[in-house]
Image (tube, rainbow, N blue to C red; front, side, top):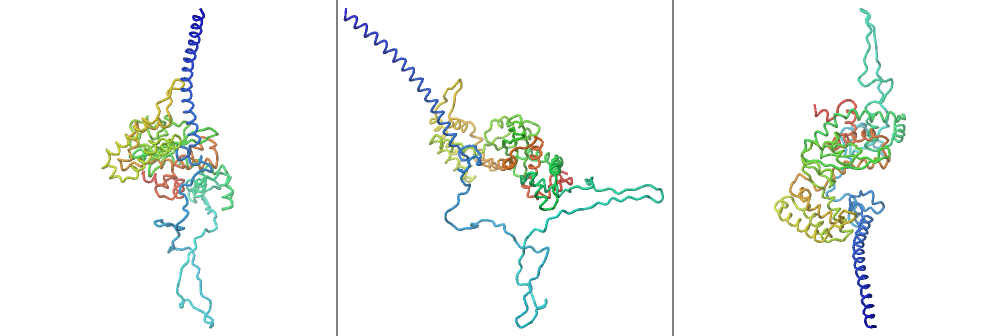
Length: 472
């Protein structure tokens, strides 16, 4: 009897232990899964905190006081211009505006030198600014009455001279340059204008000069777009700007000689397929980052920016210490530094090595983790999958001598707007941002073609410039 009771108690305790064991197994499985998700989340947050311009797409300005100089200062070495540096110092010219003769004093014996006894021993030239002043032209409109028929005849002022007093194309070009190219606010332009010329130009006059320049550059913008469309290579990028306190987007499409900028409320496909954009009609090679909207243009040959790939690889190394990413980073830099002829000769070896490192990354990176109905991939997993999928776009520079390694040209073309916003914080209106984009497009194009910006803006106000003349 006691023996049966004892067996029954043991069986009951065993059943409880089995139930507890099953529960602990289930709880352990849940905790392992939860721990895996949390570890992944912690890894993401640490990577975000440790990201900077060298290992992510963040701009250098976001690095703050931790930003490293682009070219670290050497502790030792020769000071001043280094060997191979091309100097750009002043050189004497033959045609000068004024000559001041420095004659010797009379001799101690009392002889005074005359001009025939002297010769030039040395020339020294001083380059300086004259006192700035406005050049004021008065147009006197005359009229007269014919003594024979009595008809009154009146002279006509030149085209554009419509008011009793007004600023000319030179003054307008000057304020447009100050505001657009040098990012000087209206108030400071007023102060500068008064200090230089004695006339406190009105804010409305500055705005009108920008608006008139914007209107005059319509045909120039069309020529710029057509020129980029006709080229075999283009660069594209986009950057957020603030207009009336709201986030909107400045888009750039450019090449070595031309720059086209436009503003749009959207960043992606809606902007790129709008009538402002030239991408719809472009069929050459387009260099860009991996922003998904660019891949919607199927009639374009795509090449990805190598600098973005290097930063992403460095981000995986810094955040997750993954060996494959470091190996790929080193391999990618070796391909970039390799002479083009050697790349062509070793093409199959480069491709094989590329795929081999990607396979190492695939084996190293953890498979996707299912969270809330979708599979979450690590940063490294996403990168290695893109490296495999976009291989031809990433290696386009290696086997085509006309394709650059980076998209730096587009980034340089869009960078001036960031300085503009640091000064002004926001554009007051969408139309103001449009004016900036068109004028800056022309200024950038003028610089790329080694033209004088002031002279080209001045002739633009007069009705022509180097683009419209060439289009005749």
